[in-house]
Length: 411
Image 1 (cartoon, rainbow, N blue to C red):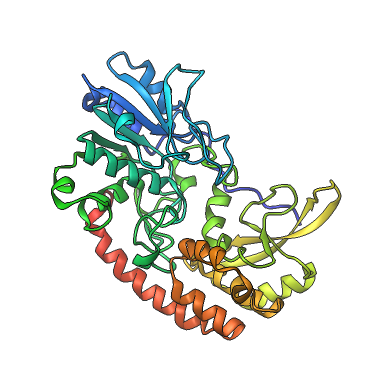
Image 2 (cartoon, rainbow, N blue to C red):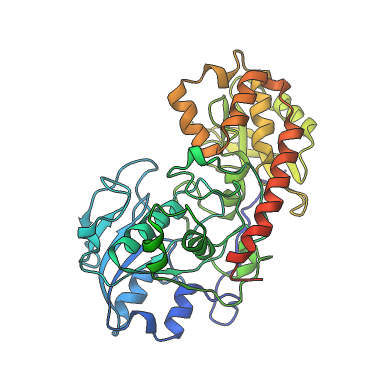
């Protein structure tokens, strides 16, 4: 069987764009919100307009815009920094502008960083999953700008999973962190601009007092042409890797599907040297035919198992397993994670969630959001009542989705 191909977007050309991004709308207005202001920009390589031109260059080339500083999130403004590795401040050799790292000594912009700015513009591509850190970076930057009296402008971009999928455990308040900045289900169904509106208008999201929150100056520049039912391939936009392990839309889909389930156990995602990240699946010590049988027996809605041919790290041809989404309407983005966790308890002794050092367990719980479920699977192993947990999360997600509609920019 031939290897699956990534769900790529069609080539973008000036005549076929169904979606104008926030940066395109800003440009179409003649950059009116930025005129006469000293501008900072928080962005990364995926911060491009619909023609693929970097927002850095769009703003630099606009004669009426005074871009004076850049800010970089995890992986840096060029996306070439490794995950979880601090990034230093520097002078950008390409533009000559100072680049302030928000994933190094500081994760919140300091008063000194913001002292020369009137406005901070944010153009970050999120992937629709709570633990991805760009929305956390945005939240902390918004906090600092509100405290410093700096206007905060978010250029909106699509949620690549669309705006209708909401799934997975919510975030317990105790575990709010850099990989859990918003109390939303693991797959949240909002755009980054809508999350910014939540941060402004929902109590307790920003760590500021009520007066500072009320006075905070937030402007979200919405997209044109995007609807909640649109997945990334339907936008007509080319995918720019948002981080080294999210090179394409296929990985965006896989991240909430196995990113949790392949931690703290012998499961791994990806095949060979970074082939099919978050879509290829393997388990140390379990043969491929046995693993395939076990995965098929799970009957996870909307998910299929496909054998693929890959080369291993030594370059030798081998077979692997690839997780397909066979029915988008039936697919619950996070469900496979919890089947993998329960399966790991059956395949591995002792229970890997009991054997995990507490410091690592707490980092995992920050991603997961639910200490209660972690305790349950550590206690009950493969006997955990997963159906009950999935049903509870589904009910909670439905309540959240109804409540979150007040932040929607698109119907």
